[in-house]
Length: 356
Image 1 (cartoon, rainbow, N blue to C red):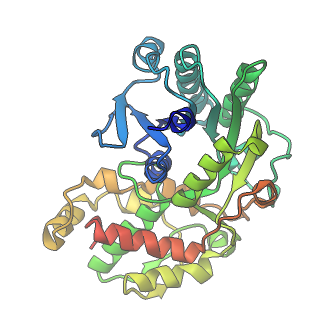
Image 2: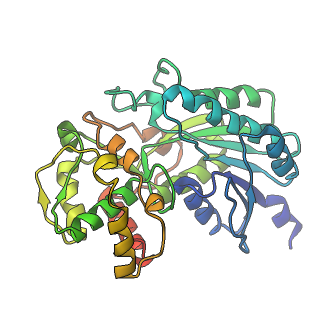
């Protein structure tokens, strides 16, 4: 190896490696020859020629130090971990602690650390609380806490003072891509809901609030987000900056929903507000029968369904979008058509035998 090549090599520590964001980020990094990759999650993973996995409970400071405090080669931390809790206030302690424990374990030993990347979202703008200012911009004022995204960014900002490394914060909309057992996977929600509707001979009804069917929204493709994350972590212009990352187009469910239904060979019927968490609760035996009938991968019903998150997204009876122009001004120009994104994901799920 050329000595210059060795000097330019980078080592990514991807925390939250099995989620929809982390999994797609690792997939993108694996296409870039200058990167070595270490994936971290509670469950770990199967090592490959490009990726080494570490199983670690980052809520435990001592375990974090034992597992991550022996990685002097790390040059870039990519933080995309998340733990769900019942209330907004309860989300703060675990999600802040995991980031703090990871950084405090890695930073003292990673002498060539260049960057810490933080995955956020529109919760920074209060989008989860109700109608918020749109388009949301990175310069918008924070809202009344609790909000773990803001606390995490404050921690990185303070930790970085006087250090050689920099940070960035990525703020995607709803992220869509492939991942199993993920609590926030809208594409999987729609795919399984549509597949079960078809099995029952039903049209595909939009299950959300009436106003949500006509609101203006945007999405973020997980592959696009992965590209943006690496860009922000390696472009010096992006040092200590936050960026909204979006597909680049807007849509309303009333226009997109019939197109999604058509992919599954379904008609639509008028929307009918219903909680997916309630109406899909008894569908596990039906799903298990479909797995056998269609020769699908034997994944548990729980791992392929995220009904609570579907209820959350389909309840937004207000506009939900941000201004993505800052990323373009700083040099990131990639985009993807949201309809094409959904079709690509559904096709991928079908090829993996995740859905009929």
